[in-house]
Amino acid sequence: MTQDPPGTWDADEAVEQLYAAHWRALVRLAVLLVRDQGLAEEVVQDAFVALHGRWRRLRDPGKALAYLRQSVVNRSRSALRHRGVVDRHAASQRPVEPLPGADESVLAGTRRRAVLDAVAQLPTRQREVLALRYYLDLSEAEIADALGISRGAVKSHASRGATALRTLLADEMTDENGSER
Image 1: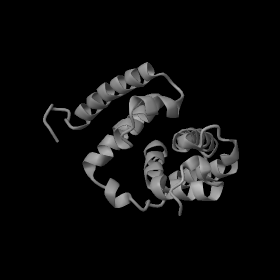
Image 2: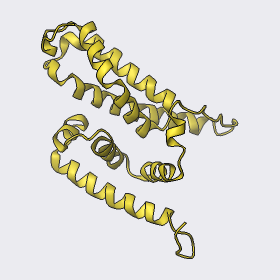
Image 3: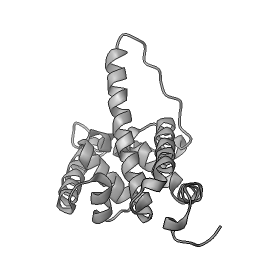
Image 4: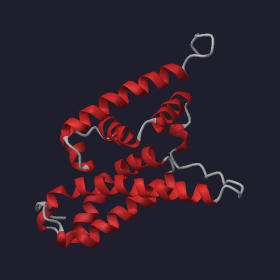
């Protein structure tokens, strides 16, 4: 493998390098958004396939990772919309429980479950900003680029989301008598 800049790579080489370096983090991002390991892997795979097909049309191949992140977020949104439609139309059928994901042992802790449940209650944009900021450790500028919003909007969504998350977790961790669980 050469050490040429990404702009000089062909599509196969570029996607291979990006896949090796970022697949796992992108799947984790998608899991946070769609809460399903298999669907998350499918979302990320589709994003890489789309990137490969559009590689020659990228204006700045150096921003391919940002393109992938945005693609994962957008495809996660689409998957959630599709899931909502399916759920509404399948109300008469017995729901099928998803199989445990490969990282289920990591997600098994009570505290982690409480945090994930609380994050799921946040509005979509706040959830996306917090996932990109605290899980992938992206800067405000990178988040703004990935979501197509301003840095000020990123700050606002992060602040409101963190405040709401603290409130939800405080309520979750105390019982009806006010004592800690």
